Amino acid sequence: MAVVIDGKELAKKVRGNLKIECENLKAKGIRPKFAVIMVGDDPASKIYVKSKSKACDEIGIEYEEHILDDKITQEELINLIHKLNEDKTVNGILLQSPIPKHLDIDEAFKEISYKKDVDGFNPVNVGRLLLNQDTFVSCTPYGIMKMFEEYKIDLEGKNVVIIGRSNIVGKPLMACCLNRHATVTVCHSRTKNLKEKTKNADVLVSAIGKPNFVTADMVKDGAVIIDVGINRGENKKITGDVDYENVKEKASYITPVPGGVGPMTVAMLMNNVIKATINQNK
Ligand code: NAP
Image 1 (cartoon, rainbow, N blue to C red):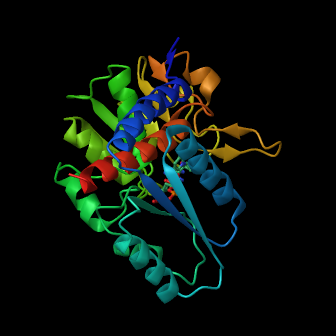
Image 2 (cartoon, rainbow, N blue to C red):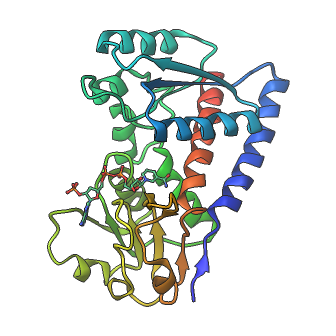
């Protein structure tokens, strides 16, 4: 039976440490400030944005929200980003996705100064991650790496299999694991013989968004299972991608949903805001 990786508790610990760092900064007259841009009123985004503002309050980071009309132009969005880039009181900037389809989010991410890009989506930061240089690692992969560190799960020489190749989870996680000397396989919807790959995983990460996709027969005995998926059922109950009850009998470690990767994502975002503040005040 697997050890349950308690993301909620670890996130609380991370936030507690950040609160102390934030107090130390304030004692030196430095006030960390985080700006969030949201375009339109996507209900899921509203929930995510609220959890970010709550975490800022708890840690002592000043929080500034820019809610834009869903009909704004790309130019207006970029103008706001440039304004926040130039604002010396703002240390971290995040553009909440999704944004309306008439806007180009990749172009917008490119415009966020890489020094304030606490989500790690600016191509400079993505490139630095691939080069194994100091950077802002995007928050979900970063949270997963923090879990490995806390639970002393060494990746060196391990077979890590990641299902999902998105820019926010699968690809940056691939780079993180490679940088820790794992042998990494990234799977996606066109992957053939998926089970053959997952059965070989010492560490299996699922980030696709399909409930009960990863079943016990796909998992090697003693594997570490990281479930990134967030799926809302009809009764609004949140589940991950993994058939948790059955897989936990075979795994050595497993993350629950909720209470696993999700809380870590917000905690590591806060970590990046404090890091950006420290870097900008060196
Ligand atoms: P995404 O951009 O939709 O990517 C999904 C990935 O899954 C794609 O690479 C897709 O392959 C792959 N995929 C879909 N069906 C598959 C199948 N049958 N077999 C193999 N691969 C398959 O999603 P995302 O943004 O990465 O998010 C993934 C999940 O994680 C969602 O449930 C999301 O809500 C959750 N999430 C959670 C957190 C957190 O903090 N816990 C953060 C981010 C995301 P193709 O590339 O071939 O289409």
